[in-house]
Length: 122
Length: 122
Image (tube, rainbow over all chains, first blue to last red; front, side, top):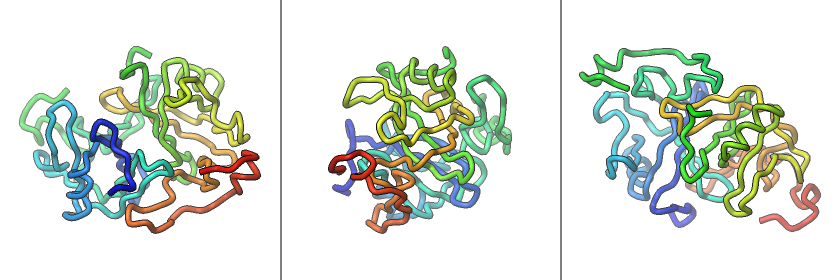
């Protein structure tokens, strides 16, 4: 993993659907999360707010199977190419990027977050 | 722009080809760079190393025409959907993400960087 540069222990991860090529989300990983993603074949991240490692889907069931991991020219950003189960965004949209800057909704709502997370979701 | 969250004045920008949906690069923008991208229709960023605003293509001629700007659910990451002129990566590859983590080259080399930048490129 020496090929990657972690800043304050973290590297930004862009998550892309390997089939549709839609960008699903952006999150951060530490070295352990990248290693676990490679070893288990399921996407792992590091939550900066909760200060802990997490596996996508552990609460929602919406796991991401890793198809390939790409790194950029500088080695300071990676892409997880994934097969997404359910949807990526906690709001119920398929992708976290469901809005344009001028406020139009361009994404597709896939699930009701209150049913999936059993609580109010903001 | 109050809908966006800038951390230390910056927001990560994922750059995606609007046609092929290939992820081309990842960079950072400050508020002025986002505003200029919207107003001029060409991608602008903020260089953390050079501590200055830059317009993609100003040296290489490889400009990025903005098609759409998307933001994520938290408003702390944006996507520039662009029409790329030339190639995105300073190494001559179409995308900065031309390698897998295990070292395979999966990208396409589009230009010779030493001819474009008139100097040795690392």
